[in-house]
Length: 351
Ligand code: 2RA
Image (tube, rainbow, N blue to C red; front, side, top):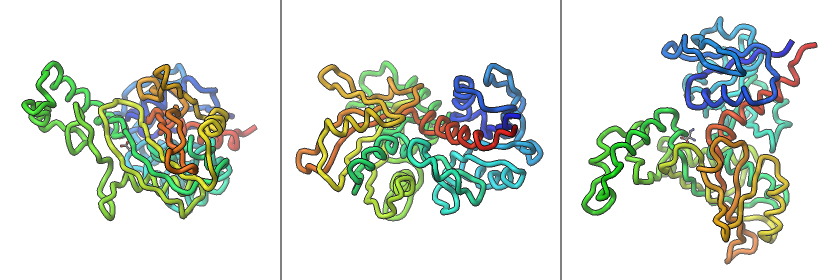
């Protein structure tokens, strides 16, 4: 029969998109089991045209599961993923708990699907949403031109911080709407928003916040270090130079990254555009004269990374600058997880 799939964290921001996504994709699953915390158990969710009841995540609920997708916070994944493996499942984990573990492959199916075969812990990791949006475009350019360095600035949507992030922005926007003084010298956004900051350190309405994640060494944020470390691991370039600045912006869904990529050889924009047009998972939207750029409002709800503003650096013939936007809940999370799980399902389907 077809393998059994569990979606752990089925009612969160990513889990919700996962259920929608599974409904639209070619079906490779037998039973689909939706699991979540006590708080969400009993909820009814439509998935693949069926109404499923969310069950509590317990050891028993994992029995008979072939592939378990985890869309939960790091500490929940760190605890439960090994339990799921001990119950016989292969885990595809979307948290940050295992990504940099040398015994856990970090897989982007368009880039390094062969690494799925070697998974000593029974766990496969999904990359961080900001890394994913960017790496799908960077990898084919690396293959063609030999990547030497990345300088990145992100423009990250609030849903990257979960449903609570999206709720916080909408609540804040309702509070600031209509007050035309806000954001000027005489209108204090902090005061208008109050202390309802959700998961963020400062208001997102009418603002940008140069911070995502937690404090890492040297003043870097954990999100910035993820972009560096995960890029190195996915591309197999342990010495790649990467500097990232991660910024949260008042966008609900769709992470964008401004990329400055330095290569071993000279590069021209048309050549790069050609490489990107042929790259899987990439769509080139690059006609500034016609007002066509990659933007979250267009990329949301779609699968590919949208790439545009492609131009060679004026002062370095080996460097390319471009802008990329991807749906952080789809390719950045649910879609990449589903793609990995479907590759695993192929190897599992019993006659
Ligand atoms: C964020 N990448 O956007 C992080 C976690 N999903 O907040």
